[in-house]
Length: 160
Image (tube, rainbow, N blue to C red; front, side):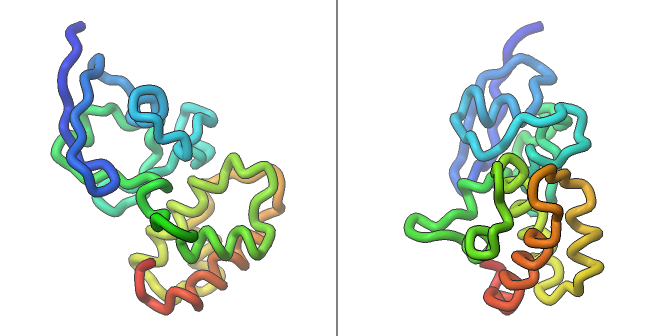
């Protein structure tokens, strides 16, 4: 196989990477581009720790070949974090003790952000359903659900 150059927008910046075909987006983000918030979990799309947005939709980056993002917009947790301070979801997770080991947190936040972008005022069941593809082994989910509810109230449809 021959390496190829893939161009896409990453966190608002045009990005070009030389990669081997079928390299997972998650691997390119972490190993080549240094975006470490995108975690390496199950590598099978079942845990949600590698969730990023592709054209605004949450995706398991461990399953997405880098070729699939050519010409598209990719956003990682680093891309939603303001230059100073935290995104309202990050603040709510921190203040509500919704992180323990923190491994699932980037994927949870990216999934929750996609939900709040689509539905600024989700009910509890909508939050639970949205987060159902993200696994957490530490918090028991209740603080995470509450953090998303708090962030939704704070953001009040602003998209953060």
